Image (cartoon, rainbow, N blue to C red; front, side, top):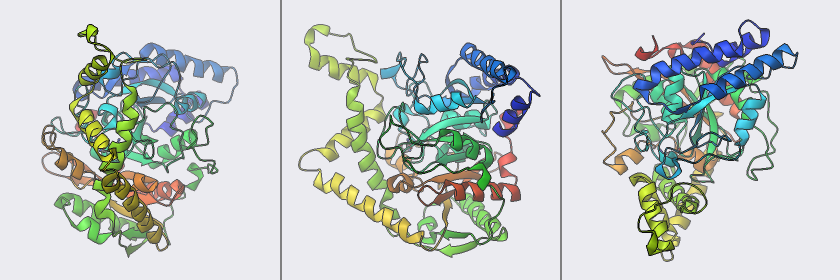
Length: 490
Ligand code: GLN
């Protein structure tokens, strides 16, 4: 059962071949068994999960329609609010925060019969590429005990890769769904900006953040996106674009598809093994009937600086609300020194080093005198980046790159050098800046004796997740990378 897809579980539960409670028990056991070595979960809530699963079984017995995710165990990144369930963003400052409301995605999952099992570890406030910026310790990729699972949704990706859940949710601001999916050998989809409501997502950078699924197959990503997507009155940036039947798009066909390859962009700084796996993946796409087209993204080389200006600016504003007054941690030291001292001590004690670095960077780029030179300039280049993609999509249907230029690196290897860490985001920051959807799928391994997973990233037109999922699914039918299981699995 643990190797099942979300789709298979849903079908079995809907047909009564297995109960949601049995499924839930099996996955809870698995989670407990793997979490000691992975540290993928900040919280597992067996009682709530089993009660929810029992509700699914009861409704089925009463003849109600089972729902698209009937009985499917789901783990949520710990920056998604669940009413009554501790939600920390892996930060000290929210260590004891219990939200009084559900995120829209939570409501949608539960309405579809999904069973929420707990909250996954992540980089603090989703800031990071390795999960090492968590107040609750790093996660490990199930493929190698001393290596990073990627970030910031590292726990969500590791949990799926290790068979702890068939589906988890992450958030992606500059790669946080796709890069951990690549580092853990699973599928990660960042939807188009506006496709999924952000209501109840603890904000990092509001013009970039999107919620999306992490799964083991493209078909499960399609199933999940169908549940998550759609307009929401509680999020003014959610889109009214019609939500297509993503599962129906999975025809297995890619003949006639034009795949753009930004050769100059992927030529530099990419690990040899990653490059080999990427070239092989392109070959597979060609064998499947796709045509490879050389394209240029002339401004892609500025994507990292643009992202780290825009994202930090928005973060400095969003994180101003954590001041110890209404909710979250409050410092009690030297209370007699007054309000200002309370604010600064609360923030000093509550935030970790990377979050503080970003608040300072963002405050600086927004400050009078520097605003035009940094923030405004970054917004202008952001427009140029979007145009690069618009031009490319006149000639191609999807753009292919590696997800990450490097395979999973060692814990501790990059954390002391923020710039090195930021540079690993080179292929995943331009899509959120342009609002575009992108998916990472497993496309091979590098290294020996360890096998370290490599991800292929496909970027699509606005609101064209269907094409991404169709290509990802067709690619899966031609390969078996997605079926490989990490050593921890058995
Ligand atoms: N790694 C990027 C960062 O550190 C992206 C994070 C994200 O997508 N949330 O900002």
